[in-house]
Each structure stands twice: as structure tokens, then as C-alpha cells.
Image (cartoon, rainbow, N blue to C red; front, side):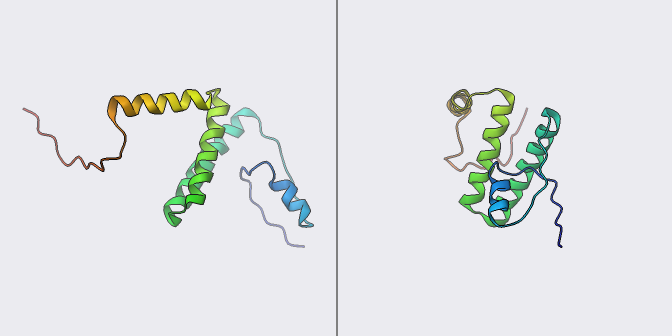
Amino acid sequence: MKIITYNKLVRDRIPENIRENGKKAIIEKLDDEGYKKLLDEKLSEELQEYLETDSADELADLVEVVYSILKYKGIAITDFHGLRKKKAEERGAFEKRLLLKEVFEK
């Protein structure tokens, strides 16, 4: 018997998919502190995977983790989008592709 140890946060349907493939998984439900810690680790993991692959699929995973963090923090998606929009209106977005090279102060 081969055992693979993961100890990482997975999507909700992964245990079901594992069972459907005739395998057995040991699953643990996390408390708040453990969940937040592993969400943060998953955010870093998904960012790294996106940077390595430049894949829209990995961006979708990254956004899913962001949405889960927002839900954990009790922040509605609409409020988050409002925050993003407000920042874009006040400071701009990144559409102009501007590189700030230097600032001179007197």
C-alpha cells in the first residue's frame, strides 16, 4: 500500500473525488486558526503556481482562495469589489503600464 502525505488545504469536493477513484483519504476539519493559516499557505502556493505557469487556470485557483479568505474575514464579495473600485478611482489601476523609475525630492 502506498501512502502519500499532503497536509494541505484542499477544495471541498476533493475527498469525494478521491473516494470515486477507489482510494481512501484521511480528512480533518480545521478550526479557525488552522483554517486561516492554511488559507494563507494556499494563497502563496497558488501564486507560485501561477508565476511558474502563467495559466488562467491557476489565476482562477488564486481568486478562489482570495474569496475564501474574504468569507473567513466576513467581508462580502460586493464590498471587496467596492473597495477595489474605490482604490482604482483614487489611485488608478494598472492599465497604463506605468513604471515609476525615480522620484526627486528637494
